[in-house]
Image (tube, rainbow, N blue to C red; front, top):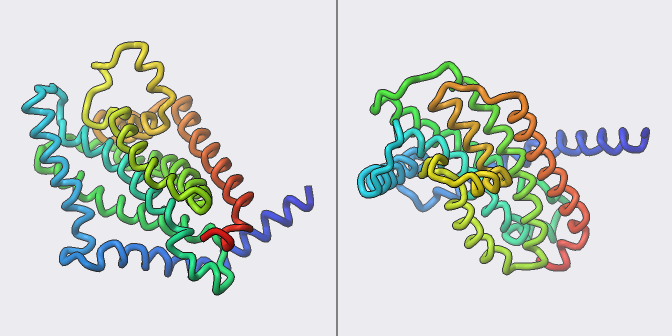
Length: 265
C-alpha cells in the first residue's frame, strides 16, 4: 500500500513539475492548427455554424424531420461528438509527430496526447459560442441547466482522453490504425443520434445504442441544453464509469508500451 501511495505521489509531483511544458504544448497545438488560417480561432465558431446551416437545410427541409429547435438539437450533440473525434484523431498521431523530441530529451510521453486533448477542450469552449449565438437567433429557451454543461464535458473528456492515449500508443506500432480510425469515426457518427431523432429507431436498435458511449454523452448534453433536464444519478454514474474505465484502459496500454516507443517512432 505504501508503494502504491509513493508511486501516485511521484506521478503527481512529476505532473506538477512538467505542467508549464504541458501548457506550452497546448498553446503550440492551437497555433499549429490555425497557423495558415487568416481567421484563426474564429473558425472554431464559424465551422459549427456553417455545418449547422448545411445539416439544418438537408435534414429539416429535404427529409422533413420534425425536431423542435433542430439547430440546437444538432449543435448540442455535434459539438460533444466533434470534440471526441477530432481530439482523439490528433492525439493518435502525437507520439509519431513528436518523434524527434522523444529521441533527444526526456519528456513524460503522456504529455503529448494529453496536450492534444486539452487543446481540443479549448476549441470546444470556443465552439460553444456558436451554439449560444444560434440559441439567441432562434429564440431557443435558456434553461438553468446550461450551467451544468461542464459535467458532460468532463465525462466526455475522461473517455476521450483514455481513447486518445491508447490510440497514440498503438499507432506507434501499427501505423495503419490511423486509416482504419477515419472509417470508424465515419461509422460512429452515423451510429450516434446527432442529426436524427432516437424516436425513429426500433426497440432492438435502441438496446444496442445503449452500448455506444457517445450516445450517453450526447444525450446528457442535449438534455441540459435543449430540454432543461438533469439526468438521473444512474445515468451520471454510467457516464462517469464509462469514462473512468476507458481512461484506465488507455493508461494501462500506454504505460505497457511506452518504454519501446523510441525504437519504433
